[in-house]
Structure formats: structure tokens, C-alpha cells
Image 1 (cartoon, rainbow, N blue to C red):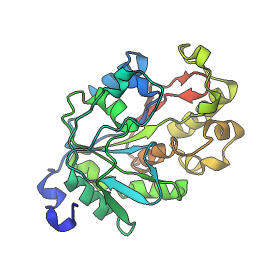
Image 2: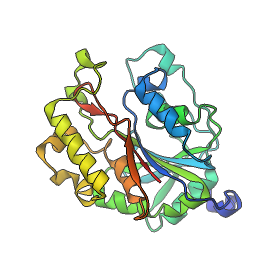
Image 3: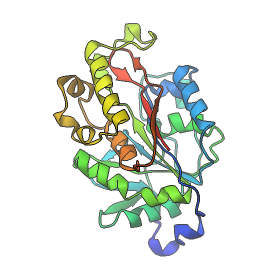
Length: 276
């Protein structure tokens, strides 16, 4: 088990850097890990614009826990947390190293929130299926921070703000989920139709995007109070909350832009956010 006393401060591991961007990536189907499509191309084009990070901290929709945890193992396993997909997807490994040092620093800067150093989780598909397109050589250490499902949107937004100092240590912070994410209503017959969404999905996407581009984040934090279309788009908060971690890190002088901003299969969106 990694302890605070076992490790040097992050300052001895990660040098001071220019402030890193912050990302929210709409990760969509796990098949994006192995398919070629416009969204994968969008991730690769994004990678060309990013400075080389010292490490990545990912907040994935798929690590939804009671309490807050951070992965602290040296070599996180690649988790295939899905079913019913081709064997080729289960064969994918993303052998990025972990960073016990960054895990300890994350625990420290989130104090007084109790953060458990976790040696068991690894990298779930919300992390590796998109990070592999940014850094295909798996040459950047990756840790994950879990989402405490007992807490409010405001709590998660404010928790994210505490991570700001990591951006100056070369840490690329990524939220991974989907803003419009209603799996029960997916239209599989029209899965390959470009930018196809139900009327409520179109309305929800427009509502959220307007708040994002206006820099008006409070309604997004209080997402349970938004219009009915947004409520249908967010039947559970797990895929939405990673967005609030990204928004919590935006400073006033920074610009927010959207990419991969399309609807998919009626009830999903791939809308992604870059803050720099």
C-alpha cells in the first residue's frame, strides 16, 4: 500500500509548466476504441494541439463510488467494463503507467475531503478508450479520480477547483462522459446516421451548449433544475458529472470551445469541451 511517507512531493517529480488545458471528452460507445470514425478523428486532431503532459488525471463516468478514491498503483490494469462487444475490443490493452506520486498529491490537495488511495481499480473504458487516441504509445502516466455518487453537482464543481494547481505541474485533467446520455432510448437502427437526435436531445444539446459558450455555469451545476429535455438527456448523473470537473477548472481569462459536437443514435451526444 502506498503511503504519504513512501513518496517524495510531486514537486520533485513534476516540474513547473505552463498551465495545461482542461478537457471534457464525450466518449460514447466503447467501440470508439477500435473503430475509425469522425469522433476518433476529432480526438486525434485535438491531440495535435496539446502540450506534452507529465501525467493525466481522468474523471470517468464509469468509476462511480461512495466516497472519493484515486488510483495509486504503479501499473493500472485495463478494465473491460462492458459486455456484448466483439472480442477485438476485449483484446485491447492500454499499458500506461500509473503515478503513485500524483495520487498522493491529489489526496493532499483535496484535503479535508477524505480520499482513499486505491490499488484495485485501474483504467476503465471511460479513460482508456479515449486517451488511447490522444496518446497511442501509452507513454503518459494516468490516474483516475472517482465520482462520489452521494454528492451534489455543486460539490463536484467545487472539488474540481481544488485541482487547479496540478495544471501548473504538467497534469492534463480530463473529464470523460456524455452530456446527452439516455441508453434506454438509443435508436440502434439509425446509429450511423450523422448528427441524428430526437427533438428532446436537440433541445438539451442546444440548452447546455448555450450555457457553456456563455460561461454561465450555475444552471449546469444545478442541472436537476433545467428543462424537461435536459432531464430526459440526463436520466442518471454519472455521465454528466465529469463535465462539472472540467468546468470547475476554467479560469475567467480562459476560452472554452466545443468539438465533436454532434448527436448520435437519437439519444446520445459526443459533444466535447476544450478549455485553454
